[in-house]
Length: 345
Image (cartoon, rainbow, N blue to C red; front, side, top):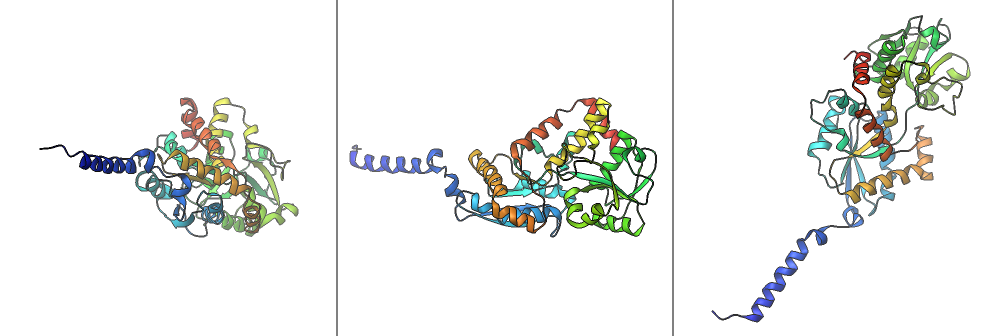
């Protein structure tokens, strides 16, 4: 059969064009092209009107302005298993293209490092976008109790609210009792810490072991001003500018292993309100999400909105979160065993 040079050139040109259209270099969209006109799902592990929900909805009200292509964020609450349902969805099911992000409970990644990982989720593989704040929590006693100082708390029992097994309101005082000899007595069954605070005022309880300073400040600052409470300590990693006289609990422990165990437990506070994207999304889209997150939290309209909603915000970058998690994952065996013992695991 005779060779048809003209036909060959047409077919070859068609095949070359087709190859070029589907080749990786050509098929790869720019970040702006990918996000333009797109909706990004924001998976929120908690219910409507929870603190995590408030923070997530504040973020997505502003973040689209700083994303290339200005996509729209859509909140989707996915409740179940204390945040593991949302974590599993983001890890195993959600598309790995950068169009799905989420917020999960700050304590979940640390369970993995303690050997609790029934879902097979490697939290180190997530793309950590950042955290909207680093928690600084306080413990206090009511002014009528005999517990006035941290040293008193090591000698005298203090009745405090518990808000559910595994909740920080129960986990942290249990750990402090074990590591530092405090005498918190947890009274279970309270809906949340605000409910527990009302019980303190009614005389049912004697104090609170673990309450974010931002929440106390926004709802019960009159207690502080009127001298109704004794501030026993706060759990942050630095002096808080609004309560510089309150001692850091980390500085009240001397045993090096126990101190590292306490720091491991309190590391979750750096992840105050964390946001993640699934593993293996394109690197340029992960970078865009991180950069937009930081720019959003620096935006004056965002800051004004946060103040209006009485939500404390300070930037923790994705890089800082990753560093904290890698440090926790590399904790020595004796520290991990001390943590397990402190948490009664």
